[in-house]
Amino acid sequence: FDPPHLEGISDKAKLRKQYGKLDTGWEEDIKKGFEECMRVLRPRGTMIFKWNEAEIPISKMLLCFNQMPLLGHRTTKNLKTHWMVFFKN
Image (cartoon, rainbow, N blue to C red; front, side, top):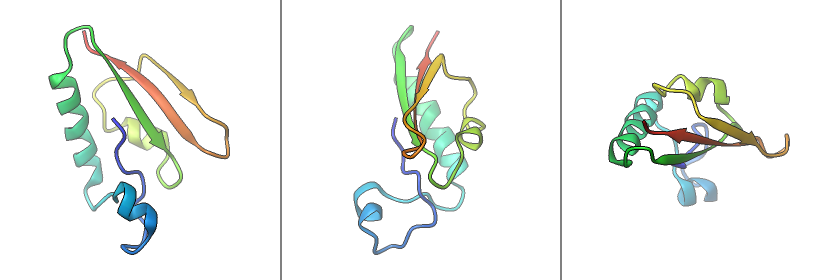
């Protein structure tokens, strides 16, 4: 699950055209996307989640989920990209 992670980006920006933009109410969109991923995931399956906290910290993103990741990894501090693993019981 790799949703768009920028909300303050110009509509003409190349990154916006390639990856999309978070709209107003993005928290609910992310929550619904996560719930749908978990719904279609097989029992005892895993989901990989990627997030770049260039604008929105991972702590705020995690509030959108109804469970915590099983484990996670952050890339170098300059990239600010987080990879997390979620498990479906």
